[in-house]
Image (cartoon, one colour):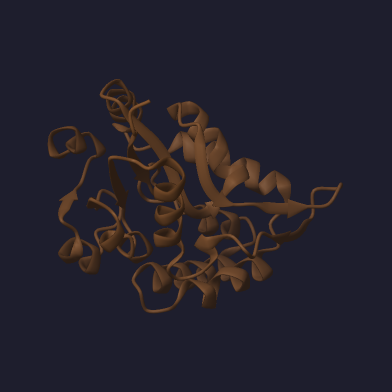
Length: 213
């Protein structure tokens, strides 16, 4: 079998307009939302390390299973306008598509299903029988800085791809640049200057990928 061509997408503010962690916080009221949103922005702009905010945000929010499912519906409602057509075209051209996210698997999986993406590398949330929050997978790479590059290494070791591309809006995505064949910065929803200047290619619509690869 020929080695695959891998294209990896961030989820939040890339495949969808929202930041899932912020939407989990929003249902807890404006004060908690403001605290969590600020922490997210600091991390995505590289002013705080991911591990400094990851667990703390979840402790503040205490998300329930129903909240994660609601965010899953929001991801679909706010899907990037060209995402479905772009993913379909990439697959038709022989690309294997993967979501690599610091977000949460139970919320992202419904969006992945809509897009026809089988593999989701994201953080598991754990709930008790009543649906109350009881923790997350603290060992998963994207709960810390350098996590997405670690996943790129895992994918390369496992799948031996002939080419690997990463697409995303945040500094955690930009960290993958040394270990991929092409890093594509994305700025439809948030155009981060550090990502724009660091990216080999910077786009504002996912369908631009089709002429850049």
